[in-house]
Amino acid sequence: MAQPRLIVVSNRIPTGEAPSGGLVVAVHDALKACGGIWIGSSGKPVDTPDPGLRTISSAPYRRLAFDLSHDEYEGCYLGYSNAVLWPLFHHRADLISVDPDHARTYREVNDRVAGLIASVAEPDDLIWIHDYHFLPLAAALRKRGLSNRIAFFLHIPFPTASDMPALPEQGLMSGWLAAYNLVGLQTNRDVSNCQDFLRGSGKVKPLAGGVMQYKDRHFVLRSFPIGIDVDSLATAAADADTAALRLGEGERLILGVDRLDYSKGLPNRFEAFGTYLSRRAPDDPRATLLEIAPPSRQDVEAYKDIRQELETMAGSVNGEHAELDWTPIRYIRRNMDRSLLAGLYRRAEVMLVTPLADGMNLVAKEFVAAQDGADPGVLILSHFAGAAEQLDAALMVNPYDLIDVAKAIDKALKMPLHERHARYLSLIATIREFDIKWWTDTFLAALQDLAPMPAQDSAAYEQLA
Ligand code: ADQ
Image (tube, rainbow, N blue to C red):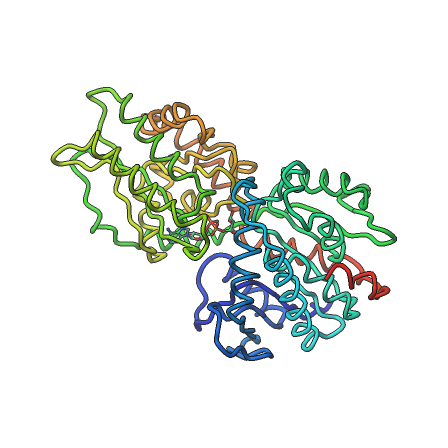
């Protein structure tokens, strides 16, 4: 069967010539194979936005960018996407900042972007939309009469049915999702949360095999756990030069790598490491926690305090436990080059991945891919990372329980080679089987299997988009 053309829509598009990073490379490969178009925002807001799409590159496929005005950036990106949807979907309804103007701008931007997509889409194109910035986009495309096969993939967790009522627009959500042919989530837990919500909305009836019925049409809801490019990470890790990282004689390395975000549980992690240090026996070797966490989204209110909180906590743990020749927490607030990061994964004996909520967490998978199979490190993984559903051979922890995490650190540092090895073999087998190529291939095959959605009364979509 001939491969239809693919249109990918994501908040950001790579602007450089050589895309890097797992998802970007995977989408790049899929677009190269099918031909197609990648559409995304140009990043920062501009004073006089171009009303159309700007071509960033034309080969081997087209990359097209749309501009956001300052009001659109503030209302849609900062306001609704990152100060309502992100906290709500990460079970932090206490942090949401409800503003009807932001909700209106979010829907208006989606509607405008739908017009731009409609101006380049052809009837047989597959359209693949990424993430929470674009939940209503399919409804806005259907309103314009597009019957294409349209899929959505949510990179972050789906909220529980009890969190969802905090969203003033929750009444629209089932209609937004039902306008897609295929809705992909990271884990089975997300699918079950989404099913509970849809069933509870009274508008959607789950049928067999992930098929959902909304009014007189159907859509499919399934999990597609995202993976990584294992070989490129393993090669980068083996080739990296990490000599600049100097540790004392016998000092052990524990690593944390995150965007600075409240969902990543960093204060809990630092506190748990402090608890480990307080409980450690005098003749245990020294362990240093190297945390690499560059700030993100600093324009959003809820992000302003985390940096301060973390620096205070690092200072307090170091003040209590440091020696003249040892600083237990080293905290780097800069972005790290990917190949150096891969080398650090390989050098670390223990990796702490302890989010309070996370769609998947690719860092956990990257750490495993980077290991030397003859002497692998140990992954400590939160139950609340999406990756926990697949990586049950990691040391699983409850990140809220400081003693549980402290005990896991102790166990990981003392784990004998045969146990590290057995756990590693199980983890790497899973990561290899469900890699990034599996993810794009499986997702696109599932979409291609579905029939286009017959054009319907566009008035039904007017109220949604
Ligand atoms: P993120 O929240 O950004 O992504 P994550 O999956 O952990 O989180 O990382 C994405 C990429 O960023 C990884 O390739 C990682 O190497 C890189 N990265 C993270 N911290 C870094 C640092 N300090 N320096 C350099 N690079 C760093 C969202 C969801 C996740 C989901 C992904 C993909 O929140 O849950 O796994 O999308 O679907």
